[in-house]
Image 1 (cartoon, rainbow, N blue to C red):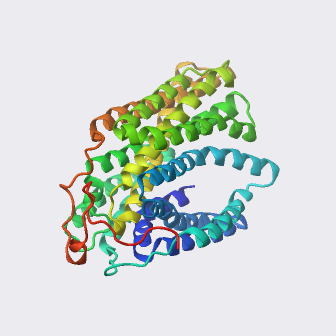
Image 2 (spheres, rainbow, N blue to C red):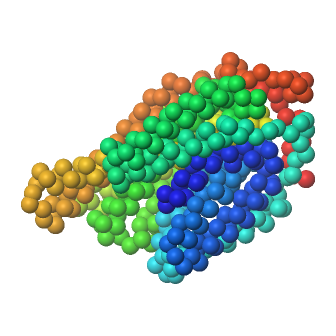
Image 3 (cartoon, rainbow, N blue to C red):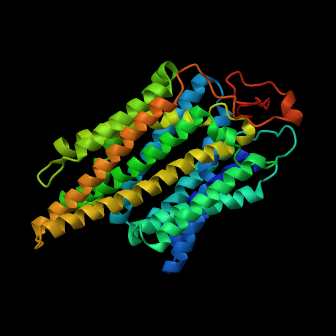
Length: 457
């Protein structure tokens, strides 16, 4: 798991930039074929070492796939109504993927073998490959080919690698371990150096105007916070369902389906009706508040709670919350970005979600473990009943902190997002030179508008 996370997180921005340089369709196809091959290698791995290597290779090609998929939406759907519908579907799928994985993973593990959790990716990739070849347009490039910012790529990849490594070690070694704080400190230094380099690079990997725009910055922050809270939901609710209520893996996966249904419903309502009318400044804080309420509801679970009255209400609130937060944030995070940087802007969305998940998992695991140990020490000698209550105390602590994440997200998103109709910021745009300077400008202040044809053909 750590091998995949390290490779995926550290190479996301590079993957997004490569989709800008090589073309969306080509990069997407390469990512699909590579991801399928790495999955087949991992499924057939005869040793643990080869399994770890295959998982790392999955992360490499996943870092090509994830931002390219979002960039394809950004550059293909430019009509507001079509864009809203496309992002609604994408946001619902992105939010529901984890819960579907729990269900499908449980079914495959119980009925076939754990290796099919990897083999199944080959079948999914084959279907996606047919769709990509048939429907993703190959757009002709206009103007000079941009160059890859090699120093910026090395700096940010090393920074993200160190960041995820530090949080991964915090889960097992604790926050005071050298393998935790040293990579985190190194990550801070490298990210600072990356930001400084981007200000003077001739061909920046991630122009600071992309992330310093107030609306886009708020969107990236919202995705990060939602990712931190969501990973905690899946982790600790799964523990509760299986270890306290005695659910099987398949039944646990089924238990998350109502949350998926609410997520899909909220995503469609939000993108087609509510976001165009109210904008992210209203929708995202509402979603964060619902997420906090759902997490608070889960803090009251105990050994006598039932799924229907104890778990289900909180899950449904959280599902509706995620369906409200993610599509609105994803649309805003890529809105108005020049086509030349659509891939790296999309990669920043994925990076925010991945980093949020790493922070959330490490922090919530540590807090839950500490609360569990403290309860055991305070109620010694340990018995089966004491151990069960200690675990519930740990879950409740993690849920309270997740609620705090969402509550902070509600406040920050309400303050940072602009009111509907105020558009994007012009103040942090990078200067435009050469051929780009002669192109028409986007009325919402996103920089030059691409004149390349958009559509299938």
